[in-house]
Image (tube, rainbow over all chains, first blue to last red; front, top):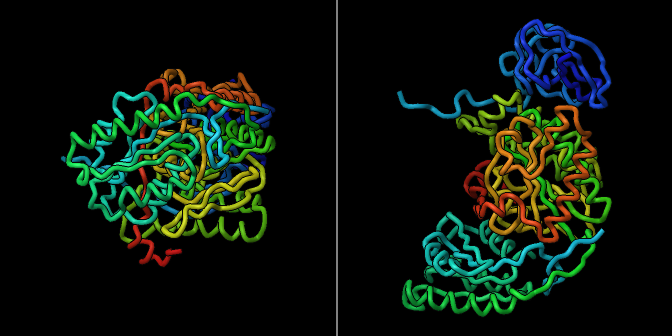
Length: 103
Length: 392
């Protein structure tokens, strides 16, 4: 089974350890390698990116490492891809463009 | 635990024996390069803020000259600088190592300066080239930890493995410096929880708060994370920070080293973990850590990185197995085995510690073998510091 790593038991997201296609049954493991639960992905999730391991409501904190990494900017369902499209920082917002290419 | 290093007159221990040709401003850099060219162990450096660069740059250059990896220093100046070679030279000379300086204008131009410089360098080389390594306790090691080109593997594998190295080194009596002022935004609480006392706790919050102000000036769009971070799965600065601080391990934070126009504070005797104020930008951060006394830096990367430093060896660790597969000639340590489930964080951390001890005793890192000699210096803009009311 494909795996995703949950760093702390307070977390509501886990990090995909390999590329996950939409609809992949994924084992959520702790750093000790213990299998905690199984989640089916609702979208494709690239390796190193995050998926929700429980439902997260709009405005709720997103937790990783047992700490707050940001806030859900929309409702996120169990198995959803979690990234900049549905999470915002509580501290500093990402720049809109890094480099403006000439037309 | 022991390593073999070079004893310096001030009691510090170098892990390299470098002849440093320091051009005090970029206008005299070509002459410094001509002087260094062709002499074994010689490296030329400069800074790019002109000839009146301010005290922070002066502090850095003096600290770099004093670094124990540097055996002797020849300073090269044009002659008309606001920060003259002789002024920096006199400060570096307090360390007791051979230090000399020349002025290109006084000496009569390029040819004379190169001839005279090469002659001085030859004399210095004869004094220091025969120095033998001696055995020293690991307590004499100061190791900088830095990450860059991070992706999510950095927080899951690379940085936690380096955290094991940090704990091992500190438990053995050594010191660790971490310079990540912006990549601590959102990670204040776990850092503050490790502060030695209330004073250190306050300094941690202040250092991070000040850096957040510098990078969130209304009306100015600032890029504090790179595209590779986001493509690598990092969503917010908090996530990046919480991953980044792992590399400092779990031991108490003894202090926050001031790094300002007023003072560049060095790592005190006695070991332990220190945070250092400065910048997250890698080559410049390495110069600051070198100026504070670090003999070596461990660099954790997810995306990969091909650079080094003129005076401190640079051990590169990647937590991304794909990056290790693509760039094996640049990555000293593969921590991607944690992601693939082949190896534990502890096991990789101990592998890094073994590598640190070998590099301390003279083993060349991949970056050294490739000849990387990056050198750059950071200056906090005194106008921004004043406008944001951050001046120390």
